[in-house]
Length: 285
Length: 281
Image 1 (cartoon, rainbow over the protein chains, first blue to last red):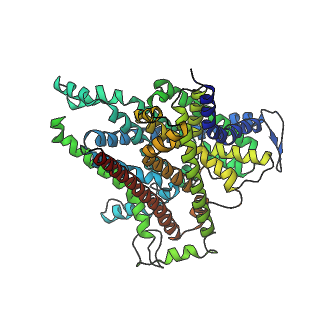
Image 2: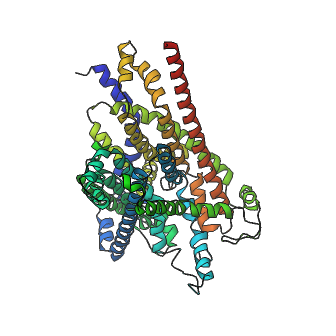
Image 3: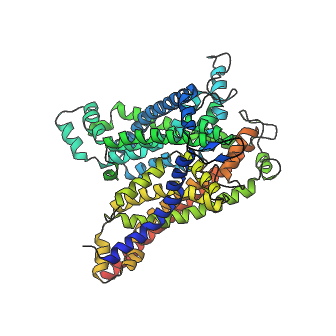
């Protein structure tokens, strides 16, 4: 039995966390939910209970187009971050044998995450731009006559930037899962005659499921909710749900933006709920 | 696995890793180099000479927004976020070691705060302050928005720390009559100090570079990422790269400083341990 004083201490310890999340997470979402039912005119918000914001959202073909491109960005980014992240984690976990090198290389992968995302996006300009390194390089060796226009400010650039920014979110949890795998399990499989490919498919990948799911949750939710990467890297050529929401916000159509936000939140939560069914995230931490 | 050491797969993997690292760092090196572009140089290679021209340009306030003020504002905000993230995550991390009532709900609340789209959250915070008739400021709504992002990271790191924590130390201390506070202050905190530095580093850099959870909540005074975003659409000179070089430098300085402190702490622990063993002998 825990004493009263113990319980009091625990509640004291979680109060600051709960307080911050209540004011800066729960309340704002309640406000968005409420405002999504409000009416508005050019000058102000009109407290009300109307479904027009949702009706307009669902009756506009633009909405579906935007969701489609957002899902495309999320799907492609997920696929590439998973493939690259898994390979990098696999190399670090199973092919770097010195503990020191493992830590150093892991740090090397982590450092860019601690720098500015905006700057990391801008950094593609001199590489992919019309007179950038890739175009001038390809022109110099005579592979192309004119600069490739689709390298920057395109869907390609958007996905590239997402992969560049978020692969680390796959590497860390997958690496973590791999380090928990009992090495004698692999030795036993090898002794029993399993090849490298079989070990990978039948032992490592199944045991990495928690890491893969946690990484997927990060990447998919970050891409689904993004607006700055799509806006910057597509150069306004394509949009995501976040971009659309931000445009409505900029036009001061707050209730419409709020309805957008509610629908997006439901979609993201559904995706996460499905992923969480695959793995008990709390138990894995 | 012994034959894996010599297999071609190993070399392929190594090559893949090297390409990945070049992919990670290459673009960054490109803009760092280009930020030293000569006064006549442009946004792309080749370099037209070598100068600090674009850094000087950055400090002329009227040319590119209010860089100095937003820079120091971001530094201050990041420092406050760092301290609060360490303190609040540590407290909550200690609580989460016991299965208290509502711990599952609180855990999911934390995860939700991490995965909720940032643009949605800042829209909500902006509307909340607007409805309450409060002005948004970087030190109120801005600070809260950043904490909603750094605290989940801090807490997840605390979980990882306490999973590896050997409870025998604090049990020994308790057996010897240490109070709950003494156990935390003299046993737990010194042992996990290096990891707490890591939590602080995350808190600082995540806040310093945060754009998505800064929009709409900083009030009239911009933080640096907002200033940078404004520049991406208006500035077409290497000044933009100079700014990138400077912010990256700040992040690198913080990483270096954290690693130094962590090394210092671990060295001190080894020294104390050796001294104690010498004393025992």
